[in-house]
Length: 74
Image (cartoon, rainbow, N blue to C red; front, top):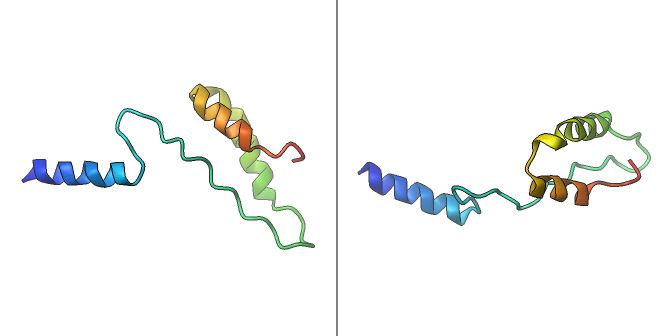
């Protein structure tokens, strides 16, 4: 019975875009933008700083995906 459950779990994961042994490269969900007229969210700066600090620890494909989504203005 556990083998059936395992196969069902693997099928569900593959349908969701996860494949064992490979990286999930579906992209990065953008942060919510503040309402016009309100100041920039401080969490945006903290998150970007944290990502940049840890960027070197990620696989090259993940680094490239992150850098392609970075806003050069911020």
